[in-house]
Image 1 (cartoon, rainbow, N blue to C red):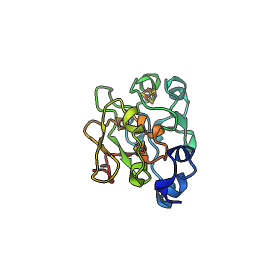
Image 2: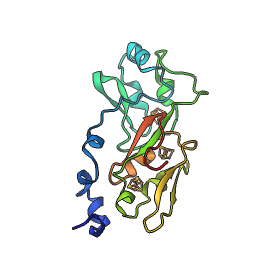
Image 3: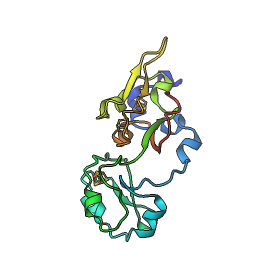
Image 4: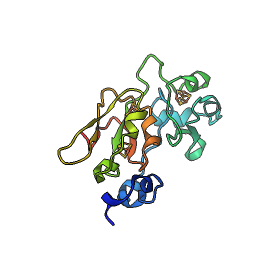
Length: 179
Ligand code: SF4
Ligand code: SF4
Ligand code: SF4
């Protein structure tokens, strides 16, 4: 059975997830993402007391205890609203002023994207509050996502919406597969 013949429903159940992603995409190890407005990771680790207060106030519950119990973000179930509560509650000098840009994260879409396999999907577009993901019709194929990186603020809302986990957040990089 070819990928084209499989129903989207089966894919949404994750049956083909592993086959649609390369081994390196599944296992690639990324540096932890600290809360927005954080100083450098080195400074953060040196001065964060791991009190956990930021986890308690995060309104979307995306702050979790990472390695060494230091706070890091997980976009599996939500996005950053840039509410700034984590910054406000912290008593350590590990955040920059909130007037500054919170971070330089952007998304990257891998070849696990359903449209790479000629299957219609626009979940990421529907979830993006910045309208940073557009779809372009391809001659003889399905429309593919194109990310307006200048509009993407790295909030992560699209990450959980992708049925094949094809979207990852990376610091200041460009979308390698969809320009
Ligand atoms: S800015 Fe708000 S939503 Fe984002 S990590 Fe901090 S507390 Fe959570
Ligand atoms: S959500 Fe977006 S990136 Fe994920 S499979 Fe659908 S179109 Fe591709
Ligand atoms: S991370 Fe970027 S593309 Fe994804 S939902 Fe947020 S603004 Fe949109």
